[in-house]
Image (cartoon, rainbow, N blue to C red; front, side, top):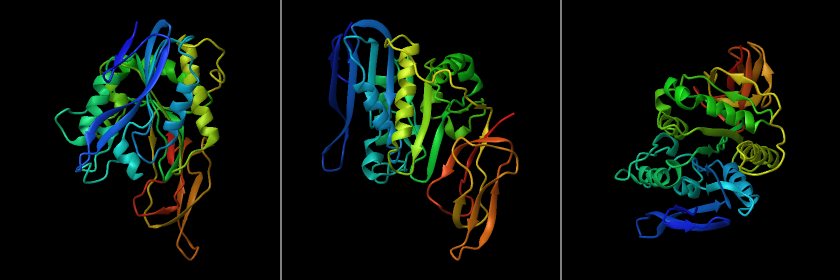
Length: 330
């Protein structure tokens, strides 16, 4: 059966890439998304992949394109909708959130789902993506990373009691299929400010969402991109959408039940003492904060036994800044 999305109908056994207008700049120039759709020759699940909700997170664009380009629609089962850059406003500004005046309130796309077709520009773009790509999907892959300031390597699977009831088992299956030894942030203690995230809103309507966080520093990393590509392909394999052997799905994954970010008391320059994925004991030294004369002014230590989800990439910090993302292990 053919698939209609964003006003385009794609036939079984075919793939198409096309632009979709989702708004206008003040001079009338169109604001567009690039949408990629592959429809398999056989019936199966519908997966949607989003990259670059945050404009300084580039790995998701590359992962989604490599996954899409690696699919042969004539051999594929189901359908794949991919939006490599889902937030063109933030992407073109190389900023995490949509900058003023386009964002008006400096809106973070991953806090406004399911969007508002009559709202601000960022909310309208989210609403269009939700209506055309998300709401009829069987699962969503929402690709993220650490942005310019951090390096990340983990899978975000934190939810609420309600999303855990509706899609918790499905989300667990997805991150286990992804594998690669990538650790997982679980639990149901989602902060109120995160309730507008895509994974929460999709979960509340029964759509499981896989949210890898791979990369950062404002650049592409071949090893982390490769991890993401193989992980997403493992999901396609596990769901029977492509026919091949998975790689790394059986690799052990540490799963935390919560996390925190130790905060600095002073401004300075952070020197990392730990690496991504490291398992550290409580009170282990994670980083040293120095002044511009090289004098140690503060130490950053693990609040509990942790797996390190994020490390600093941008070394300069202000008082109260996030430092290292510690996933609690019990």
